[in-house]
Amino acid sequence: MSGPGRPKGANQNGQLASAPAAGPNEGRIIAAHGRHYTVELADGTLRKCFPRGKKAGAAVGDRVRITPQGKDEGAIDAILPRRNLLYRSDEMRSKQFASNVDQLLIVVAVQPTFSDDLTGRALAGAWSAGIAPLIILNKTDLADELPAARARLAPIVALGVDVIELSALEPEKVHGLLAPRLAGHTSLLLGQSGMGKSTLLNALVPDAAAPTREHSTALDMGKHTTTSTRLYHLPAPGGDLIDSPGFQAFGLQHLTREDIIRGFPEFTHPIEQCRFYNCTHRHEPGCGVVAALQAGAIDPARYALYERILEENLAGQQRY
Image 1 (cartoon, rainbow, N blue to C red):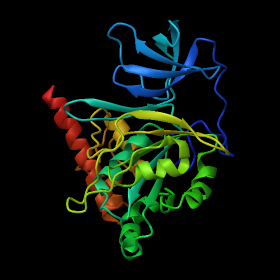
Image 2 (tube, helix red, strand yellow; image 1 turned 45 degrees about the horizontal axis):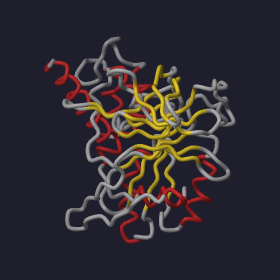
Image 3 (cartoon, one colour; image 1 turned 90 degrees about the vertical axis):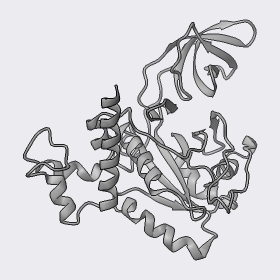
Image 4 (cartoon, rainbow, N blue to C red; image 1 turned 180 degrees about the horizontal axis):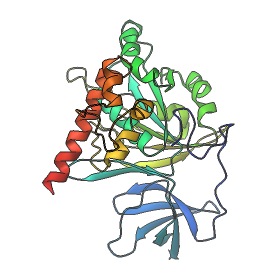
């Protein structure tokens, strides 16, 4: 698994190995709308493509092989091997975000109040898939409430996750802070509704024209503005940015117990002290994780999140 600061597949300089050359009928999915997808071929042309039969499961970021049909359509014959796939799931359904992602940009804001639970779940999902996370703290112009937001992010910072503070209303500063971190990578932009994600996208990709709305102060939550997932090519110095719909829930019921543990990197060293190889890190005697928790080396709120995710997954397995 990649460390918190380096995208998976990157060398020591943070540079990614270039993708293999694509054939004339191979391309990348850059937008998804239900069961039809926009595929960008190697020559830059776009085709509206559909999976054959009842096949599904393609995601933005996937490299695919197609059969051209007509002037600008096609059929998806195969999804080429992925490096990773990020999605959320609950007892009702799964929702794919994107594939072949190098880093996850988790957007939170000084106001409205962001959810520690959802932020922690997004981090766990990223780490379990080997994707490097980066927190973007938006709306820092709300100076009076900025210290409280920083304090809530402190346990994440302690894990080595970078936090970039900015105001999406200052496009030049946004570009200066983020462009070097995005160049050469495929990044997924993810966040609760109302965090200013669409405004941030417009600052990074001026021609994206993403719709924005003011969040509802009365409800202390945002309005959903992005309804589909799409990949944008960033202006110089480059990189690709995938925008996804805002969310108010982030289930991880697709993860195995090993995946969940991988989503909590602070457990890595304490686990080496566990007496039992199949320790669940909850109540077993001689558990290194519980000992680290009791010693103050693991944040109690992070450990409580681990327990919630584990309980949900166990309940999901019993249901079926």
